[in-house]
Image (spheres, rainbow, N blue to C red):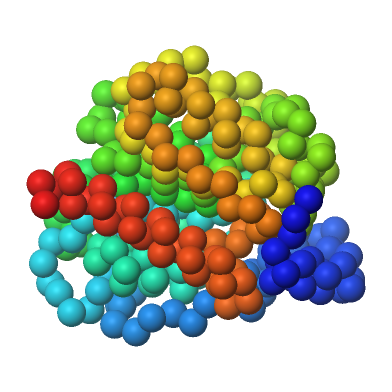
Length: 309
């Protein structure tokens, strides 16, 4: 299978390094350092502030990015970060979220949702739903437009974005304007062929360990595995990006097919020769920056169409 030269250099450097540590705190530190080392140069002219969203028995911190040259109400992108629901933090995605805010001209909200194993399923998705519910009612308090909210995320964050959209339907909430899913985890009991025969960077064993810590025995619950939700009618339009070297490729493609069958407008794109996570790796992989611009263009068009422009 073809591997992009920049992606190959990345994989070769990992292979030449030490094996990942067994201790989860050391793993977290290592993954954060890796993500930050691969990040692109962020644009200027974007501010970041922090605010809290109240939940049932706690509060959820959110990082809020917006262009610094306007005080006007802005459309909102919620970005649920990846990391299996175990690793990484909003700060590890700082550069790409600044790029999205700058290129779209929108507010980007990044929740610090609770993570496993300290807070396993359903805590992460409950937090992500709580942030969505709060924003559709209170986005004006942060300078956002509550009628123009898109949910998005990468990897486990893509799972969370899909789950939030499905929960909005279950709870009869106003639906997101759209959902953007980047190489998403969508079937936690997944046994599709790509789980076993595509393993550039992310592997079947790593996914199995992540799922065990995050979801335990809840893998068949549609709130854990959005691909297993039987009724996809009425969900918001989707942009799904898959990577052909990724173990999650088959479930991303299957979800796109099922959404289309249910009548949901769905744009499905395959990035060839890249690796899981490349969206955040534009400092070393230019294709990551091109993907950010691709997503930004799709999102900006969705906002323009919704605003009648």
